[in-house]
Image 1 (cartoon, chains in turn yellow, green, blue, red):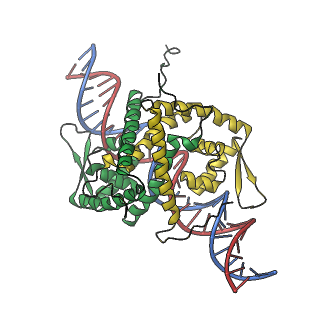
Image 2: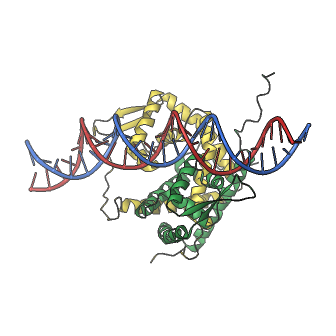
Image 3: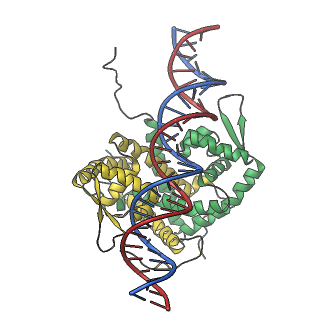
Length: 169
Length: 169
DNA sequence: GGATAATAGCTGCCAAAGCAGTAACTGTAT
DNA sequence: ATACAGTTACTGCTTTGGCAGCTATTATCC
């Protein structure tokens, strides 16, 4: 049986990892959205560009899954970025349904110019942390995410466990 | 001097606390929204009710700040919850601008019935964690949040140090 | 090989979040 | 007392996200 870290009878949001993560996420957004706004970007626009830069997600579908964004809404954001000449849609011959997004040179340059601003804010948030604490923090976050990823993959539908065989490109 | 945990030249999203927290938050949402939907609630509705239950935020303004929700949008969510008889708006005499939100008995009962479902999902996500790891995780999250909270409070405005006093009059 | 299902991306519609402006109330300074 | 600025909650308008449906392409099954 799984460890019972929380119990319904004693649960309080203040010490819930869910609440604390939500709050951390909220405040990160507060800080970064302001930074991006000054550079003429929205948060989701940066997320897409940075995701491309670091190879996290190159197809619209990947981006939807990785960043939990709606497919329809994403199409329109990609339209904006393409109109601004920051990325291009490329059709691959091996699977002509898929669109591969590629940073243009201006696009890459723009992302690179945003990175130091993000790094600055991250370091500011972690100013009280030792190197060991940051490493441990990353390890625990990765562990949590790996677990949730596998449980979400296991039951993509409304509860029935369907076999999720590897279907990568 | 602040520690430089990240450097622009080597930064990759994959090992960024920002990205990992965003991802953790996303997946938590995936899991919990489904749970709440089955009970006839949205995520934000639960958040408000749970915030009231645990005394995190009792005024609309508090809720906006705590959960980073828009003031106008919040008014309408509170309307829904009030119409369903789950909470009440109470005007206090000491400051008649403020509205104090109070759970009704049905409201309290409903939140309490949701708690075990949340606890179950949290425990599932933390199934690989030892008690020590959970404690350390909570400590680090609290530390991060405390820091970000203070920096956000310090500069509530746009961050520009100089006011535009030069050109006028 | 042809019918069927599954996947990827896009479009239209609707609900919700974000933004700006307003009214009621409070605190402060003159 | 009065004027002024700051808070708090709310209301209209705009933008965005979420959902369902659609087309094109690929995979699967007989």
